[in-house]
Image (cartoon, rainbow, N blue to C red):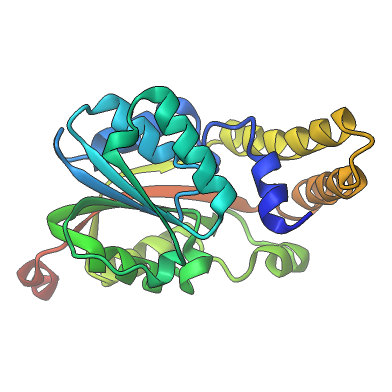
Length: 251
């Protein structure tokens, strides 16, 4: 069982592959989608959950998603057909960091995938490359809510504290127009769903050759979460617009 398969099973019972509840997702999309006939792009779309929600709420909207995982894209296609929005959804199987397209999108979404682009600033650069004039970016990433221990840093890398994270975003030429800090309930619900879905699959399929590996992965993840980073990790989601150059000079 590879990482892609484990991730697919672990996210089966959570609506979004990020620590956000339904209300937070709805509000972020409300602030991110500028009008009903917008074009949106999700880089690292996974199963297309953000795109499907946007399409369902805006019958004239068109969406594109990019992901390297064929199994995730297959789930997105199937869900789009079930919901009757497949004709307005285009999916690309390729590396999101290398995706080339005209800058015609009114909203670019990159949620929890900054590592795939090489960090925060390369992530923002990738979004900027696809953004139409006046467009918006919806990003989500981790930050240190409290001083992390060495084990947390080893697991999750060198994250910023929230004020530094925001300073870097603003210095790169962006203005946050909406934001959401995941609550403890959202963070915990996400981790319980991750470990619980994977564990349940393993227990429901005891004769599957991957059952023991799946259960072990869930056990390790749960221990890392509870012992290493639960008390230090936070997740921030931002809707961004480009800051006019003259405003940046004045600052």
